[in-house]
Length: 65
Image (cartoon, rainbow, N blue to C red):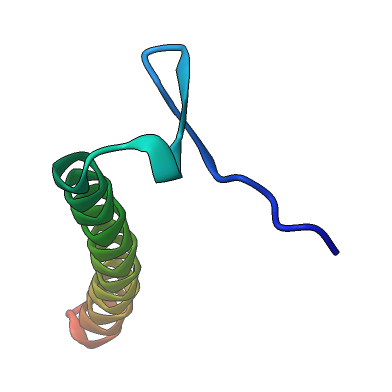
């Protein structure tokens, strides 16, 4: 299998990753890290929202009727 060149598209302009400066590559890696953290935090938020609903339902069960 041939090595594929990694292309990055920014503002509808395509760039070869290997042709970018070290600073540009570092910024791209930072964006990738932040995207990963956003995904992780969204998963935690989903867990927290599910727990909140469970607590709300449990509260309804113990409230006087």
